[in-house]
Amino acid sequence: MGTKVITVTDRFWKYVEVRSIDECWPWIGYRNKRGYGVLFVRMDGETTVTILAHRFSYELVHGEGSLADALCCHSCDTPQCVNPAHLFRGTNQDNRNDCVSKGRHARGEGHPCHKLDATQVKSIRLYGKNGWSHRKIGQHFCIDHRIVGRILANELWTHV
Image (cartoon, rainbow, N blue to C red; front, side, top):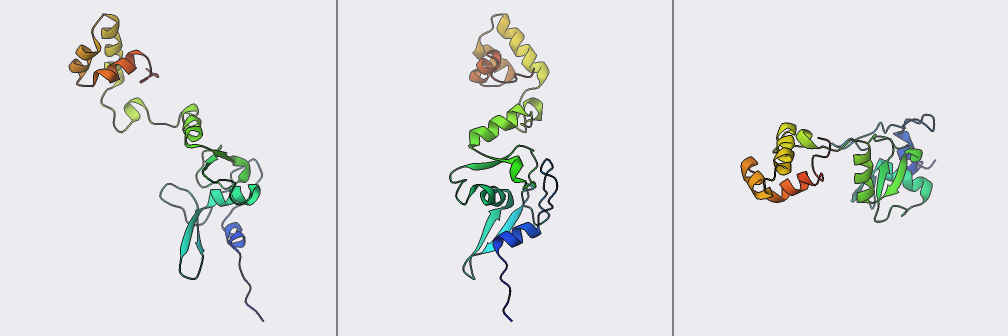
């Protein structure tokens, strides 16, 4: 009796909780610190390759190499989901645009590097309307004058 060879695809499905096509299919195996499913594949007896489970799922449906030089993005915004109906091929810009359109990006006071708050931004806009120069406003709030220009042009802090 020979030993049954378990393929990578068999191992993949072992860790997928398949539900209806509309629902997320959660990866129930190991996940990385960002919540994405990870599949470890031994290549030559020594080398282990790490494959993101959602990428593997996408390539099962669309063909190996279909994500060459591209990201595999989630329409459902659920990192552990491997449902191919929830995955799409995209660029880094596509992924960022998707994030912004769904309001998932850090902005304003929620951004870890913010130096201003909403009240200060409103004051900057008021000073700008009253004729203060970008440099003078920047010095007053201890920020670069170019940031002031972007706030006044409504390129930054657009939600305020």
